[in-house]
Amino acid sequence: MRDPVILRLSQFSILSSCSLAVAENAVSQSEAMERYIQTGWTVLAEANGDLNGDDLADHAVVIEAPESVVEPSSSCDGSDDYSDAPVRRLIVELAEGEAPAVLVLDDPRTVLRSDQGGVFGDPFEDVSIENGGVTVRHYRGSRWRWGDTTRFRLEDGAWLITGRTEFQHDSISNQSIEYDYNALSGRVKVSVEESPDPVMAPEMPDCVQCRIGDSCPNDSGCYAGSKAMKTGEYWFDAAIKKRVRVGELRCWLEQPGFYGQTGFQSP
Image (cartoon, rainbow, N blue to C red; front, top):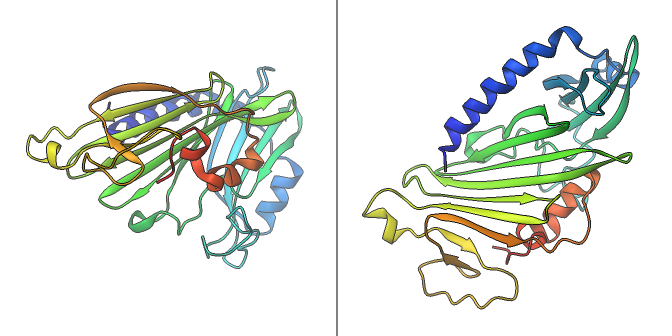
């Protein structure tokens, strides 16, 4: 597995090149987007690319509200326990040639807010358009770093999740675990990389969540519901019955969580 920091930097370089290539064909703003800007919302990141196969440069943008705007809540249940920071919205606009763009997605919960990243601060990393879909990335943590990537695209008039990747990386021992869910195939790939340190490796096992229904004795130095696994790639069926819409993502991640949704025991 490549170092997560190096991987993100290489992805950024590639995506920056792509963004420069389509800059001349940047989509005009929708009326809704113009209203946000006029009322004090700030653009945090944006990307251009074709999302519906018409060879026009569509637009994905993340915007943040003025300080006083903290509703709606970032949590699924509507509580304010998760954040006191301003709302962030993920906007997607489809190009209409010379006419104003058409707003097709306006979601207030997909992008994490500035106070949800732990000691690393703001967890939002970037938004991009890749392979005809939109990708949102986050990165946060302290000694243990966490990251997630959510991918989705427009299918039959609905914005559906095509995949989600979550990784954790110990910045001292350099061990890492990545769960990569492919919603199109219904499979999850778990990539494990043990610490290269011969002293740390046996003392700090890579603890992968056990599958729901599996016996998982706590005898390998791991916490309950997980077991030690060696460096390698492991494949599992996700056992998910339906595709998830973007507007359902936050609840899907919280109830019962990414691990439970993809067939693993929750931490």
